[in-house]
Length: 373
Image (tube, rainbow, N blue to C red; front, side, top):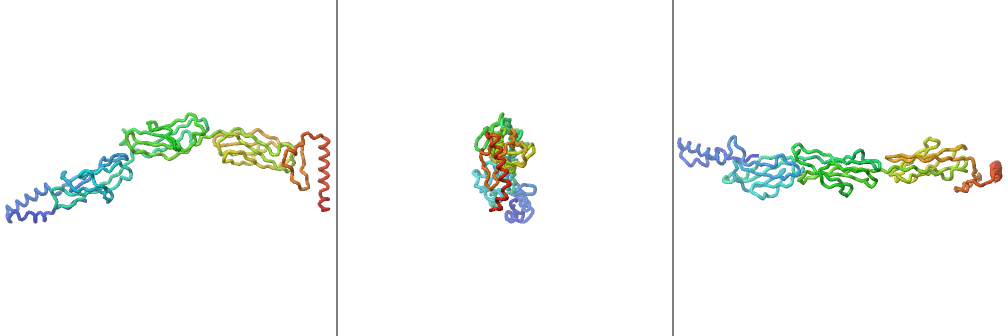
């Protein structure tokens, strides 16, 4: 808004007493009005009493923002005050300039100044027009990318790129970058926007982020965090049958224990019977896992398992479950012993025959025993 000037009517009141009515008085009055207009009053085509300038223009983050309040035709000012969005700022250290400090995006807003014009005290306090200050970013916040991927196999090369772009009006400036993992600094400020790991190890896993700044500037911008997971390939798993692979009866329960000694979790274990998948179990911590199966046939069964994680997969050596030397479970309701005593290794052929005959007799007489109870 502009200051209130002195109207021609007020001028006539102020100077009319200087001469009597008449041609000479009118000439004198006209001359005085022109003099006052040129010296003190903004006339048609002239600027307002006060105007505000924000410096530099344009202003970027990190620049030293300064406000300057000027009087019309550089007239001296007094009692100058500065405002942002209608709120009074701190008092200026000089008569008509104010250092706002380092510009940030929050420094954007509508600025104005007020003050009194020297030698024209009857005008009172004047107010400048509003000046819009829009603080611009010299570069956007960087983005951290992992090449070829943030999930990779141990021993593979990894490149981390801190990507951003300078504003066209800041193209002559130079950007500096730093790289960090968790709470550690991997590379301090330098001109290279990339960090190279020739052979990433599992210990290199973590949350990575980077920063960018202008050389000689104070504004810093940080990228979002990027999780990098360096995966150890799984080793060939070992398959174990519990109970052992021989001496089992049809209908017996067998546990398939599959374990990979090495490999980054989570590990998925898959179980197979004669090449056909039986099921899979995911182990979030990479430990061994069991899969229960029931013996459904007297023929030999070929079992195997496979361990997989994000970067590799390995299959175990097969295990053959043989029923050639079968030990039948007692049928009077006692649970079968879950121990290696089931094995019949070392028994003579005659003793084995006796046991088979005895088992058959018990099976035949079982209905009679139940009926007699």
